[in-house]
Structure formats: structure tokens, C-alpha cells
Length: 142
Image (cartoon, rainbow, N blue to C red; front, side, top):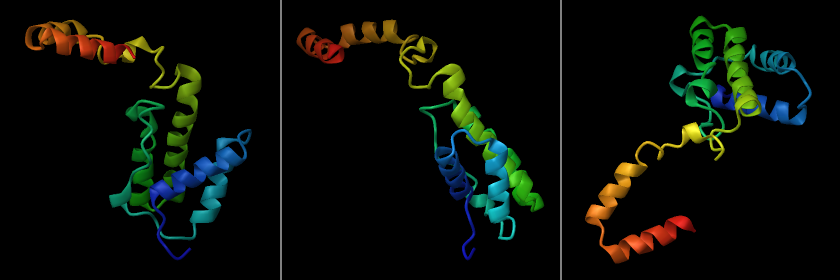
């Protein structure tokens, strides 16, 4: 391997492995990644990130493995680097199965407008002329 891998590269490769073999275990993916990367140089900590999955799971879930990955990079331990990637991969895969996607409209508790809708209506009624208000209401329904 000529170039240093990034954590994002490793995560994307893990996603591809899971897509190619969805019935396989996370341990299989972990062993394949360790075999591939263990002879190479470690990722830079400056690029300690994975693609965002806010629409699938809360940030605290899809980033759950990054502290373990960081520890692996700092200690130069590929087992920890890959283990952290696998933790995040498991969260990205399992959260929607167990809780539904974050952008699922059925998850009313995630509705950020729920707590402010009354106040928003008062402000709009006070400051928005009736004709503009009618247009805004029509557009919000469609």
C-alpha cells in the first residue's frame, strides 16, 4: 500500500464488504481489514472521521467507534483501529433495524418543530400580512 489510508477509506471499505456479503459476520470484516492494513502505515489522526450518517442514526451512535480508532492510531494497534471502525459500522447498520431511521416521519419525538409550532404561529400571525399568511399556509400543506 503506497498511500496512507484514512479512517474514512477503511470505513467505506468495511461498508462495501458488508454490502457484498450481508450475511457475513462483523468479525469476518474485521479480520479481512486487519489482514489488509496491518502491514501499512497508520491513518493520520487529523483525518479521524467517517462519512456522516445523521439521517440514519444519531451522531453519538455512528461516531461511537472513533475514540477506539483514535486510541488504536495513537498506540499503533491495528486491532483497535479496525475495532473502532467496526463499532461505528455496527451502529450504522443496527440502529435503523432496532429504532427506525432518524429521518422516519413516524418518529414524532424527533420532530424539532413540535415544541415551537405554537410560538411560531403567534409570531407569524402578528408580523405577517393575511395574504402572505394564506400563501405560506397553502405552500406548507403541499
